[in-house]
Amino acid sequence: MLLHIGAFHLDIDSHQQTPWHRLAPQTRILCVLLLLLATVLTPNGQWLTWCVYGAAILGMLLVSRVTLWVLCKRIAVEYAFVGVVLMGTLFREGGDVVWQWGWLQITTTGLTVLGSVSFKALLSLLLLNMLTLTTPVPMLLKGLAILRVPPLLIAIMASMYRHIGVLIDEFSAMRRAAVSRNLMGGSHWQRMVIGNMIGSLFIRTYERGDRIHQAMLSRGYQGIPTAVETPNTGRYDIAALTLTLGLALAGQSISLIR
Image 1 (cartoon, rainbow, N blue to C red):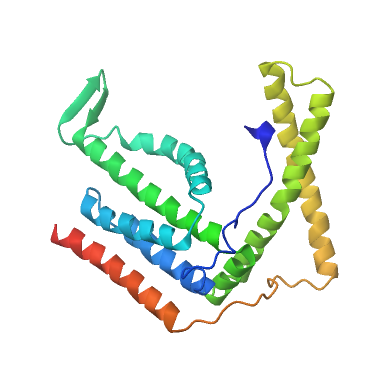
Image 2 (tube, rainbow, N blue to C red):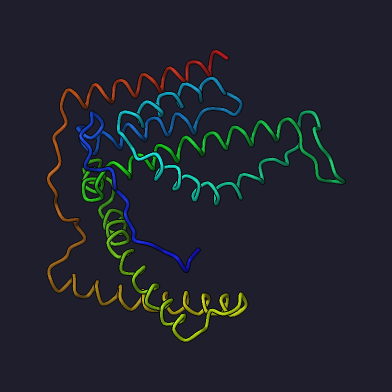
């Protein structure tokens, strides 16, 4: 997979004209955070609550006109890494034993925990990917600054996004050099070459980052992100936040009643 890295694009649906795009970036971040916290803080086994949140998130996806094919591809890649961690929640003690092989057993409690955590992870990834797909990165960073996120953290995120493309170009150049020298013949050689390429890329990244930082300091950089123009909050933003808060409280009330 690492040998076929393509161009890096994050906010490919940021130029749509929808009610979601008319919201200020800080409002979008707050709406996503409210639903995200409500989803994560819901106790295990509250399926009806997650159905309410899932319906709300599905409505947000339809309103924002996210490219579903791109969204599904990103979710599939991210869930592949999350799924490895989630498998550890399956083998838990408690409840009735559904399957057993020696000391390894699957219980009803383990299935409940696995299903609950998987549902939480899926809804959370849908929210975060929708936010990044529909919000330009400069506006997203500006929204974080308005919400009083530490400037150093914002500067780190801005530098990471700005130079990911540079790193991908570096890796692509190293891959082409390895292919032109016939170093990718067998799987054993591919693993060795990729390992050496990653180590060399780390060193190049460190050196390039130091040079960039020195150049930024010489041009008066003080750790403050570049200001971009963002829409002001208004009644529409207040209505969106109120609706999101109402949905979050409604889901939590359902989980408390049950």
